[in-house]
Image (cartoon, rainbow, N blue to C red; front, side, top):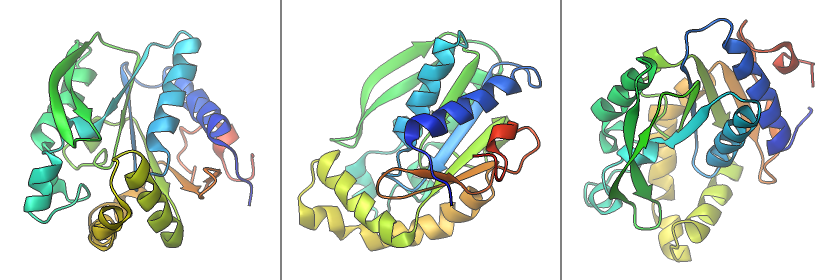
Length: 230
């Protein structure tokens, strides 16, 4: 099976999003979800940069900005894959505000402390808003999405990638990095995996961050993304 690196995957997706501009009212809302540490943020930011380079005004926001604090999640025995840990109303409000064509605000999040910083970031109405994160496929948010991108991995890779990310990004020690993994995987499979498999575009990533386009089947996806095209 053919795989591509992150830059090439972003290029193909940016081309498809660019093509949506002739079919959908702007701003176009792109939702990107998947297991943690699968490169969602890097891919979403790269798509944003490519669109901006092509004079398509684009903004990236992480759904982490709407998570309850990590300490509270742990105290309640919940992981970020459980929708009870996200401000679903606020996230849906962001989607509605963005699709209205008006400016909007989003809160900033610190991944090391697992808390919102208290700082709000204001945005003018973009041509494209890329909303990326574990909870990007919330039912209250999905009606606003023009394109959904799900990222999956083999379960063995998921474990290794998550532990590595916890060690590097969240600055946890090895014991703490592994502690919540089984619960995270159980909640991911229950709450998120089914919707990721139904996304407009499904990418499978390996530990080298090479991507395979597993299901680019929607009619509005660019021909370059259809099976056998890459």
